[in-house]
Image (cartoon, rainbow, N blue to C red; front, side, top):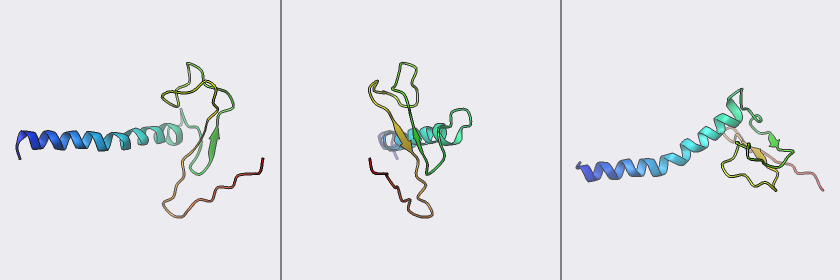
Length: 86
């Protein structure tokens, strides 16, 4: 293996691994960390206010949008989501 092969492997590792690491960081922040926890697995979290400059749970929030999020744990079985009529 030469230097160019190694550089290509490192580049591909970064390109394909970075999104997974970023999503795990978001998962940890929203589900696992007691200081920043928003919700549990298979439950929705809803924001009741619009975003402000202090909003930090998403990188680029819109100030005229309310947000909902859910982390669905599909390891054992599917999750059925029921939405009430409006």
